[in-house]
Image 1 (cartoon, helix red, strand yellow):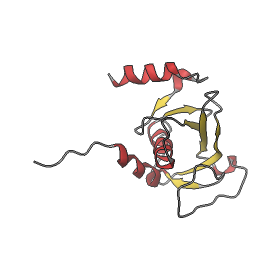
Image 2: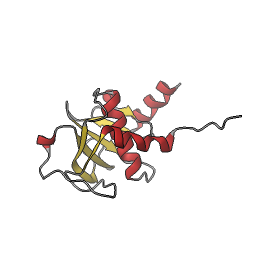
Image 3: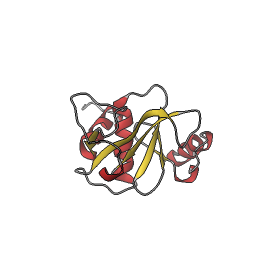
Image 4: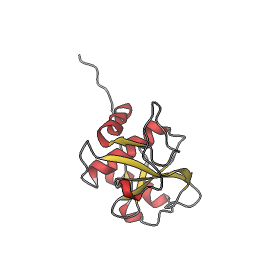
Length: 136
């Protein structure tokens, strides 16, 4: 059933690499751009935590990245590269591919090029989307 839902969501997006699209735990679509760069397509007003969750989920699931791998913003929130007419954030796992000095901060940015988090840290934001079942 999940595959059917993912296929229908991906088909509704005008993403160039449609067959490669990935639906993250935060329900956002991630489009691979090349071997190290990928774009999280914004949807439903999702905030930075959901976007970073999607980036980390993709890095773990599709790129095989470890929790210590750094995710860098290559292109901050703006017009999508993979889905014309949408907004997106381009991430990379390769520090050499960013055009500015890497940076960190106390808030979670999706606009500052070079801002980075570890995959493990960013994947922790996916907990916002996990169903919690109370003990009985």
